[in-house]
Image (cartoon, rainbow, N blue to C red; front, side, top):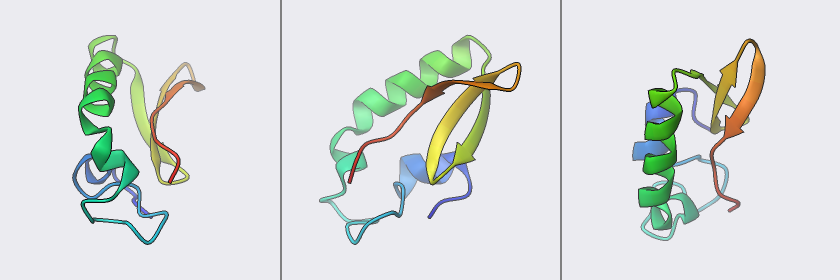
Length: 70
């Protein structure tokens, strides 16, 4: 499982056997996930990793969780 958000966009989540393979669900949806990440950073949400996925918070509350089911 990942511990840095940047790893999610390079290696993917690491939660299944398809981790770091071309068949990874996160890889197949990479463009949409990257666009969502960009939008979260534009509005200055705080980034963190929870349960192997990128989460974005504001005032300590989760606003957005990015990811894709394996």
